[in-house]
Image (cartoon, rainbow, N blue to C red; front, side):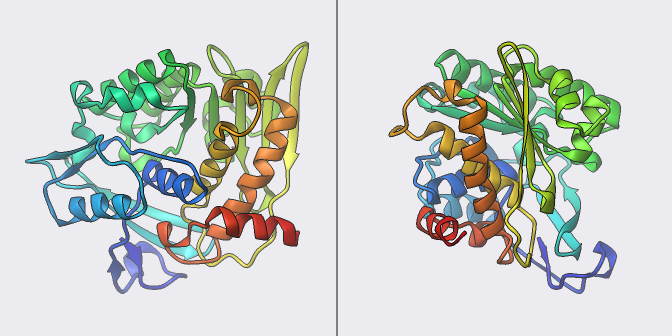
Length: 314
C-alpha cells in the first residue's frame, strides 16, 4: 500500500494505493524485464490482493506455477510511507499472512532443480512452515548446481526481537554463495559496515562474495580470492530520485542477470570474482538508478534496452 504523497510519516499519510510487489517478486519481474527467464515460488491468500499478485506476475511473464493459494490466511499487506524520496517506513499486516504458510511439500521441485540461481530473503525465515520451505528450496536448488543468493532485507517489525533475527539470518548466511545487505544490516550482523570487516565475518561455508549497498554512495563488495581478500567500491549513478523503494531489488536483479546470462563464459559460481563483480555491479547500479526515477516498484523497473541506453549515455 503506497502513500498518496511523499514527505509524510505513516500516521500523516492521507491515503494509500494498492501496488503489487514484495522483494523476491520485484527481483523476479526485474530479471524478466532484463531478458532473463524467472519464476516465483510463494503463497498468497484466496482474496483479491492475492489474485492481483498472481495476475501481475503472469502479465510480466514470470512463471507462477510454483505459487500456492491458502484457503484460510489472507495475503500479507505492507503499508509504506516515505518521509523523503530516499527513505521508507513499513508496517505489515499478517497474523499470519499466507506467505508464512508455504510448506516444504508445496514446493515445485522441478522449478528449483532447473534454476541457474535461487534468490531468497530473510522474511520467509521468520516463522514455520515458510522457514522450512525456504531451507528445503535452498537445498534442492543448491544440489542441482544453482547459484544461491540471499538478500538479508531485515524488517525489524516482523521479527519477535533482534536476537531471533540475527540467529536465523546467521544460520542461513553460509548456505548462500552470494549475500547482499545494506550498511545497517552489516552493522547488525558483523559489527561494522566496512566491507572488509563484513566480508571476513560473513563469508564462510558456501559464501563466496558479500555485497553491501550504500544508497546514493553506491555499493561495495568483498570476495575471497587466493591468497587474500579483495574489496572494491562501485559508485552510484547520480539521478534525481523520485522513489527509492525497490531500488535494492532492482539492483539485485541486475546483478543476478549478469551472473547467470548463458551467453557469457563460465559458470555462475565462477563469476563471483573481482573483475566480473565489478562489471556486474556497474550494470546493477544502472538498473537501480533507473528504478528510482518513477514511483512504485514494478511499474518503475527498466528493460534491458533502457539500461543499455542509460549506460551508453554515461
